[in-house]
Length: 115
Image 1 (tube, rainbow, N blue to C red):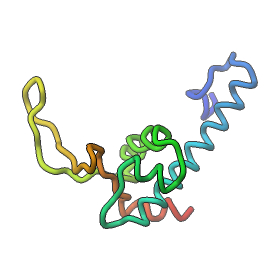
Image 2: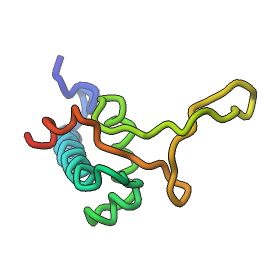
Image 3: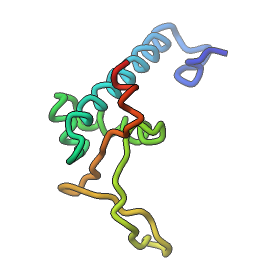
Image 4: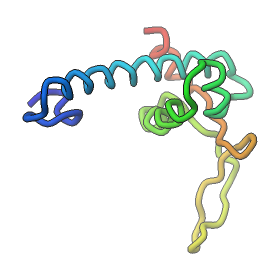
């Protein structure tokens, strides 16, 4: 089975398969650009809107990449302690600016951004 099997089905038309390949390239280039922008702001970090402004990208394009990059350990949000959940219990609270989470590049992402 192809590495890209999760991007398209075996019986999809060739045009869909090509589009999936392009999407994969966009994702990689977006992640590299986001990391570069965050490495330029190591002290204050940046919100997804600020990153989009610096990179002249659509904010939604930046926002859709950040959570996956966090799972990979490339970016992080700074915890600001705990806050109560709506239905009980506690959840992490994160640093915010203008109502948006602030993101930082991790030290492990420095090697990835230079590739």
